Structure formats: structure tokens, C-alpha cells
Length: 328
Ligand code: NDP
Ligand code: GDR
Image 1: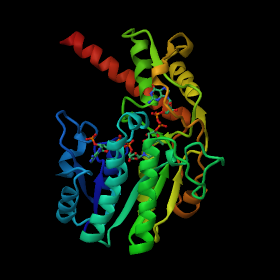
Image 2 (image 1 turned 135 degrees about the vertical axis):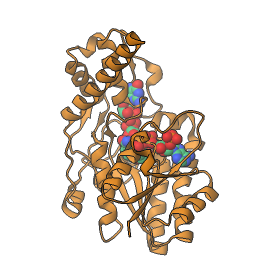
Image 3 (image 1 turned 90 degrees about the horizontal axis):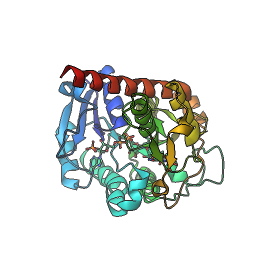
């Protein structure tokens, strides 16, 4: 019998890559999908006919329970969240409800409906906040500085409590920033690569950014999706760091992305103070030694190759829309 996986956040960046990976491994893939007024499935449209999509929402406990009863999963990947850190300052209660309580609702419904299922919880390097230790490992204390970071830390500790109290199989992947051509357009890397493509084609003249001097440890979302799957194949539910082990500033990302298109970022980037956050995580660097040792996880895409792929993708999509508008 085929293994069954249930993915929350299947329409998001990492959930969509994970769905493809699981289909390639011959799983039956179910996904929780929430109702929106628009067409929110662009990342999974190419393989949507091979998925089973169940309407629901992490804020609606009944819909989670219903979905679990429909799909009887062996593995559950909780990728859904209000995942934008800056937005979490504007909508802290919503963020707590989806990202924090939403995870707990899922853990509790799984305990009641299908207690043998294995759960992957998408934890985040934002939980470290301004960590006092570098690089960060699974043992580094959490010190979150945003409503998003607090909500993810709440979910992470709930996972731990359910493991201890009920022997639930809930494993947490503490992922550092991961990007791709499917990254949401409001995150800094994608905002930059789209701007590079539009500036190159003279559709605009500048890019407004906030803090250029924060450092992030960037990987490819495909590698993190692979790490999530490996996490649930391990015999015991544990925490694993998924990171590249190299940290770069937003400025360095910007410089490299503009250079890929033969441009100098300094001529186009303007600082807008309104894009600064009330509190900022200034530097993150992850140590994935445990994931490498116990799971055999290896990040396959370098910082440079990631930027190259994103810039090429966004240049191609601008060129495509320009040629369609000429043809039309
Ligand atoms: P995205 O923001 O791209 O995707 C978020 C997903 O959650 C979307 O499918 C979205 O659905 C869904 N979602 C949002 N609110 C709800 C809700 N109330 N009920 C059900 N589904 C909901 O995130 P990523 O794919 O980049 O990240 C995946 C997970 O990993 C997230 O939990 C994120 O917080 C975490 N994470 C991400 C990192 C990164 O760098 N990308 C690093 C560390 C952790 P819709 O399409 O309808 O909006
Ligand atoms: P982050 O990612 O907050 O690390 O959270 P984001 O890309 O939003 O910001 C990275 C850094 O860039 C700075 N920055 C800007 N950010 C955005 N979004 N827009 C701007 O215009 C801008 N200018 C500068 C930010 O201040 C920050 O320092 C991501 C999310 O995917 C989370 O869900 C995930 O948990 C963490 O990564 C790990």
C-alpha cells in the first residue's frame, strides 16, 4: 500500500516542493487548502491533478479533524503558517493563532484521530532571535524577538510536551532562511531578484529596502523539503537544524543579484526607514552537523547558485510577459 502524507501549507514555497518530492517517492499526497478570493495555487498547478486537496484552515479545529479523518496519513508535515516576520508585528494575534495555536490544534487533533502518524513541525531560526551563541545548534537557547518567533517557539515547545506526555512522534526541523524562484515576493531575496529583472528591462528605476546589514544563513527550499522528509524517516522524533553553515548580509545578496544582471546595486537601492522592523534579528548562522550525521542531509545549492537560479527565473518571466504583451 502507498504511504500517505498530509501537508499543511501545500500551496506555499516549501510545501509545494515537498509535495513534488513525495509524489516522486510514490506517496499519496493530501494537502490542506484554505479558501481565498484569488487563485492561490500557482505553485502546485503543474501537478495539482495528482494531489488530494482538502479544504480547511489551521484556525478551524473541526476542519483539521475532518481532513485527518479523510486521509488517514502516515506522515504529516506542518508547513502552514503566517510566515512573514514583519507582518507578525502588524498582525500579532493572527500570527499567534495560525503559527502558534494552529500547530497545537494539529498536534491535539492528530493525538485524537491518528495518534500513530508522524508529524514534522516547521520550526524556525527566528526562534533563536538575537542568539548569544554562534553558530546556532539544536542546543542553543531560544530568544525570539518578534511575534512570529514567539509563535514558532510556542509550537516548538508544544511539540516537545506532546512527545514527552503522549509519546507523539513530532519532530522539529529548525530551518534557517530558504529561498527559491517560488519564494513569496514580499521576502527580501525575491523582492530583490524581481527588482533586478524589472530594472534590467527598464520597467523601473529603483528598489526600496530596509535593513541591508542583517546577516542570514540562506539555503534552497528544495534542500529543506528533503530535510523534512528525512526527519520523518529517522527512528525517533528529534530536532534538527537545516542551514547552509554560511552567513551573508542582505547587502551581499543584493550586490550579487544585481551583478548577475550586469548592474551595480548601489545605483538603484534606496533605503526606506518604514521597512525597518521594530526589533531585528541581526545575525543568524546554523550548524547542521547533527542532520548531516544522523540523516545524511547535505545542502546541495550554494549561495551563488541560488541567486543565479532566482535571477535567471525572474529575468525569464519578465521577458516572457514583455514578449506576450508585444504579441498581444
Ligand atoms: P509560505 O509563506 O510560502 O507558505 C505558507 C503556507 O501556509 C501557505 O500554503 C499558506 O496558504 C498556508 N497558510 C497560511 N495561513 C494558513 C491558515 N490559517 N490555515 C492553513 N494554511 C495556512 O512559507 P514557506 O513555504 O516559505 O515556509 C514553510 C514553513 O516553514 C512555514 O511554517 C514557515 O513559517 C517555516 N519556515 C520557513 C522558512 C523560510 O525561510 N522559508 C525558514 C524557517 C521556517 P496560502 O497559500 O493560502 O496563503
Ligand atoms: P526573515 O526573512 O525575516 O529572515 O524571515 P525576510 O526575507 O523577510 O527578511 C530577511 C532580512 O532582510 C531584511 N530586509 C527586508 N526584508 C523584507 N521582507 N523586505 C524588505 O524590503 C527588506 N529590507 C531589508 C529584514 O529586515 C531581515 O533582516 C524568513 C521567513 O521565511 C520566516 O518565515 C522564517 O522563519 C525565517 O526566514 C527563518
